[in-house]
Amino acid sequence: MVVEVVSTNWDDDYYTKQGKYEGIGIPEYWVVDYLGLGAKKFTGNPKQPTISIYQLIDGEYQVTQFRSSDRILSATFPELNLTAEQIFQAGGLPT
Image (cartoon, rainbow, N blue to C red; front, top):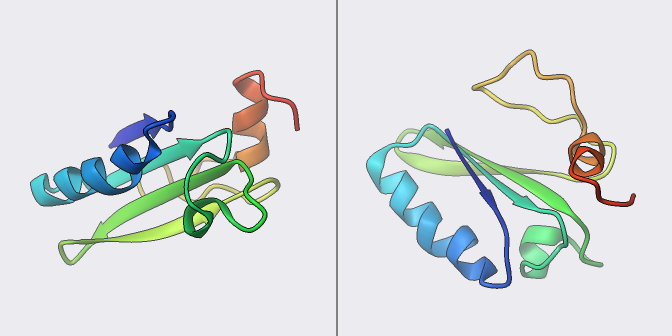
């Protein structure tokens, strides 16, 4: 599992690194975009803090996005009981 925290070069996290991780078979890849910096297709419209979880299925990533009160669903941590909002709050971000 890999977790990337998005910075101003967000395209690396959403495109470049995703392709590399998929190529080497990382089973689960999280992109934590706590400022909603990525493109609208990643962070919604209007843009908002988003956690994108990519799961490797048949050699390709399938993505699920989580925002605000969405409960995080992870194949790596199936018993995880946190929402996106709780993760952002733990990082000291206002909600």
